[in-house]
Image (cartoon, rainbow, N blue to C red):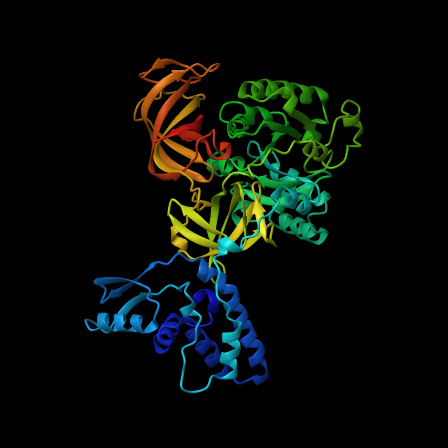
Length: 593
């Protein structure tokens, strides 16, 4: 009833309407809408049109009610005794059941009676008095509900994707780098030059940033939208927007650079296909970000461990060193050596001189004489355009990792996240794990535009109904009902240890970062040390693990997490391990215990 009526009526009014109408939900709703209209005679002419709205809402809700699995209704009497009963086909049976229960107490604290799928819920009870015209209209327009699974249309999803994107490929791009490298300014200016930011809005940002004493942060405010981010001058959460190149539709994620927000950065990097590593070339600034304690190395290592293989290194603030070729070559050599050790191929990495503040070499080749004298390569936008789009797991069972949960006006609530595999349509019933609850998709929003479907690679916001919002949290997974995601607290994994000062032993505490999840874990067993080249175990049950070693370990988490085998779902089989504020290892799931 709440799904149909929205917030039009209070809960006590709806409960009383159900009781007064012999527990016939359709009749109770008709009664409430008619009573509401007749009690507000300010505009009698609007009653028929409002009745049509009520009829439409009932029709739209038919699929939702049919999709619900018949549940056990529960009733608490006097806060002590809980009675459960199947929803009967005849309303009088329900009335008698409640009456017999209420002999013990007249006070009913909680009544939850789900809608039935049987035709009896649609039939208006016969009365001795004739029906009103409004009742007849509602009755005529209330069609028998059909299971949503049977009504689902079969999509040629690959063809639909090409049609929606106009022949362009979708890529998810994350912008990473040390704090104060100029990531937000660089991408904010790029978006402005592409016309994605209104000139009037940009002018307002410039005026407001000047008043705040942060004039150089105007372009960063395009992506740093919260008051705290603007006040502190650093990105805290992952900002997301969209832009297009000649051949690509790009979902842009601006990740935080400060070491305190590495977990947020991992969330963004886990959803990315390609990356832009922004480096501040200013004398002293590059060294601070690249040497021990800086985030340049850690960010590059993280994105590679999370599956990113294509990287553009944006040499930012080149105007501060007069577009010096020597400075460019020196930094490129240092970064290139490290990236090769991290697993990047030289052919998959490009180095581009830029200036985020002046906009040089962002969307068109620079005309700066000092730069064109030695550089004739692509601008940043051209490099993004030549990135290869990965193969999406469209044919696999549906998986969406929840990155945010929030309530909006009306019925239901919203979840957002990236679809990692498969596709879904409006009206689909999805399983929410690890809560093991079923929800129904009522609205699909992609970049603030309503859609009838969404597929792997899309960052979507879904409005869902049929379950309690408290059962869904960041890190939950929405999945296909016939192929649920695996849930466990113990798993076997192959890990690679990075620079860690202390040996890793049995019982070692760690923080496991997986997609949008950050979960305390521990090393339960050290299974063996592995040969990096062929994967064979060279030493079983070692006493400890040291930096640089490749090993198989058994991990145990404090709470159940949704995870998959790496060989089945690469996107859902990777994770990172952190200790003492540092990323100490990357791993892939080989077995779920």
